[in-house]
Image (cartoon, rainbow, N blue to C red; front, side):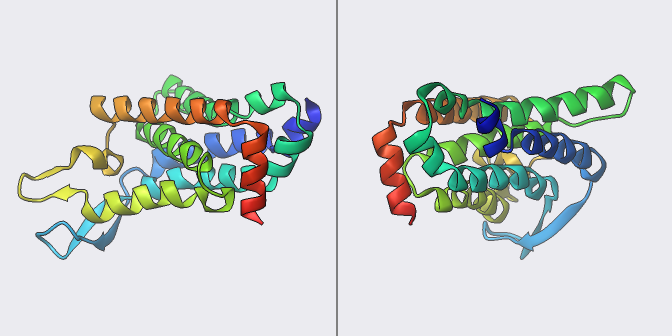
Amino acid sequence: MRIWIKANSVVQLLLAGAIVSLVAVFLKDIEVTLPNMAGGPLFAQVPLTIVLSLMPVIYFSRLRDANLMLGSIVGKRQPLKFEALIPFLLILSGSAALLVLGAIEVPVSWTIIQNLTLLSGVQMVAAGVLPPKYASLAPATWVLVAALFGHDFQNGSIRWWAFIIEREPSFEGWGVSVIVFVLGILTTLSLSRIWRYKLYVWNR
């Protein structure tokens, strides 16, 4: 188990979740300007936190890519199941960091946790059907499409599926994020060693 924890850099991932969540609190009001492809103004403002939420997810994807051979061939069944816990621990570490700030009365926003939940789920689902080295493209594409097409300037709002570019989390956003995350967990748990090996060969 210790070898598995070290191989999957669990401690580093926990630190990444906590650090990203802490940084997001202090950068939540910073926005970046991107082209607007949804009609209306040529450019639109999106929160910097969408980029922050991608960082630990891409890191997790790279680790999964590097350790696929270990998990698919020499890994025991139990450690393979624990793989599904890694993104869950990532979210827990980020939530713990926000709870600490909240305890000392620092205003926090849970948008970063909502985003991490969604993007981790997207990454896990993608890793079940794509070569691991391409799996991180799925959450990155989700963020890019939401940033470019998510504004509905006619109604002065954000389209429901682009909630990731909202400043604050929403009920609909949490619902979609949790559903996608659960699908990602189920995908990870259902992968057989044979399919993992095929993904490894495909990844070569």
